[in-house]
Length: 353
Image (cartoon, rainbow, N blue to C red; front, side):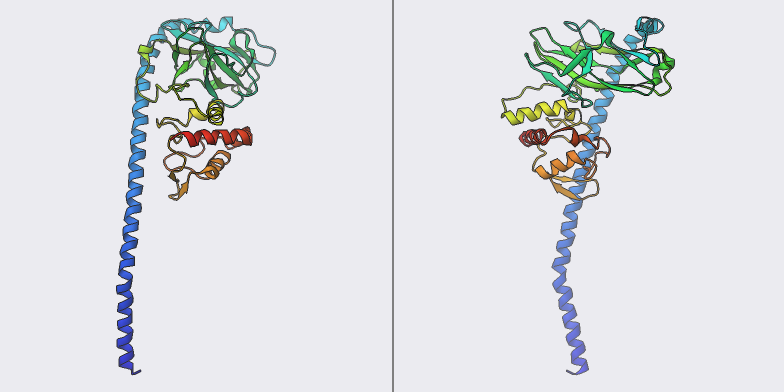
């Protein structure tokens, strides 16, 4: 082939390659645009969820501020006296009494009581509403609702309310007030107040596991009264959907394994961060989760199937969902449950369409 012919042929072939690649380039651009649109939609959805959470938080703060104002006068008078009748602790320990102040009136029955956490209620934040005939997983009662802790020691306990009436009873627990003030920072609670209107079914019960810790510099012999204000008037409860989430929503009868999974999700504390209704919580909702394609923090996507759910429970920070922070779920969470229990929880998640 002559040089000129070779050159023309080469130019023609190059042009053919360019023309041939144009549809592919256009397709790649379209795909990128679709991906960007999906990302933009996901960001918009997360922004809307965040706005809902902030709106809910603002509403809860307004309600809490109003309720706190009503409690301040009483708390100020009691602050000097409350620790006087706290039982004296053994040598080397401090006494921390957990007390509840009801407004405007007491809960029916004995009110909120504190017990040792029995087997089955050792997971922090575990919470469940129980129908009549079901006993909370509690151990021995704490006399005077008081714990004796060495400096730096932490204990998990279970707070129980048994409803003696023929109607459901709801109550809202406000942030605790420690007294005396100089010892307040020494009392660390992974606690009861979380903007839920807790609900005990008629003739049933409700419980939640909390953790109480004495600070490392807590003086031995100290006596501290930790006060939780409790609202008992439904008219004072916030009306937003997050705050009105209850522990025992109405539900149709389910297969035994699904019902078992629902109960375990409450007992292990999963329901504190993952809603079954689509309402915003600190973690992704379980409603409609199974079978969807989830976008992760690194921009990749993953199919939510049984294998993914098992990985997420056993190693929660390995695949963090976009829009949610890492470190929210304890890394050893999956080791707290048996394979049968994990299977039941996954069956429950599958059922939440």
